[in-house]
Length: 429
Ligand SMILES: [Zn+2]
Image (cartoon, rainbow, N blue to C red):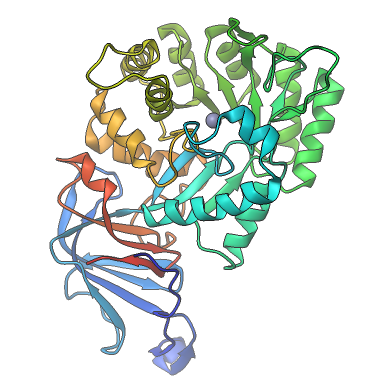
């Protein structure tokens, strides 16, 4: 059982300050002892390390016994366990739940905002207890600005959850998003904010920024009819305006894009990440690499949708999975930067590690897959300085697992201990 525990936080007297005078310091101390700790480059585990946490930060990492801390400080013995940074999923939808529970259309059109938000609170707890301490949530899918409220509720300590980077409503062009397929007489609400033209898009971006967004999300390609072909949605001029307006406020842009022409326009416009990239060619992947645009492959979503359509692992492979495997191989060959972004919400919250498993199953090394869910994702979020590593000065988000994830990535599924911001969340030792 996980818990939202701040009870371990204790105030102690520390020696400190100029001249070594004893001063009262309210920051709680926690020492994790004896674990093997993933080095910041994600290449190897260092045996027998202690980690000193002061308040919400990691303050020292070193061989067992070297760290000086008062005797009465709380120590957690992690001997025999592997300690990794809190995991990051750079593509989530907290306001969605698995499509085999309710279709996307029904979630958007029939579920109340209140029910969806309460469900998302439970989703956040499941996510955190699974060792994912940070999410970039890429669209509320009709639930307005609820992700901003979820983010702030976590920050304020009202509910347990991962650190959330919110993108609120997302931007879609007229006629390029669901729910779709209704008689044109009916003005059916969409699962995102409809905005067109340079002026309309600048205005929509400004509205989302005023509402507290951390990222702007744009759907750069989509089908126009149920079952229709995917085509680009926004012109180059429109995408340029979105990125320019977001940049004015210091915010980055993430783009849903699956086909070459849409990806190319987004890269030219200056987006920070491409989501899905399902049919990206070698050429466009190399363009992304050269421009430093990160790919979130969302392999786990493709797998989940194949399952919902009745495919089993034993039966013939679903075309979506075949396409995902081929795209991922092209991405690996191209050298594009890949971050862990799963599209969780399409499948169950707390099952985020499936994306990391699939990256390994489809050809990435476990070390690179771990990197994609830690260092690389932190870099994408503009937080390479304090997230995604176990190092002095970083926020104290750490996860302990049994076994060695560099040898068996599936051990990530069963975290034994989760600490976020220095607070003990899960202790199943
Ligand atoms: Zn998504």
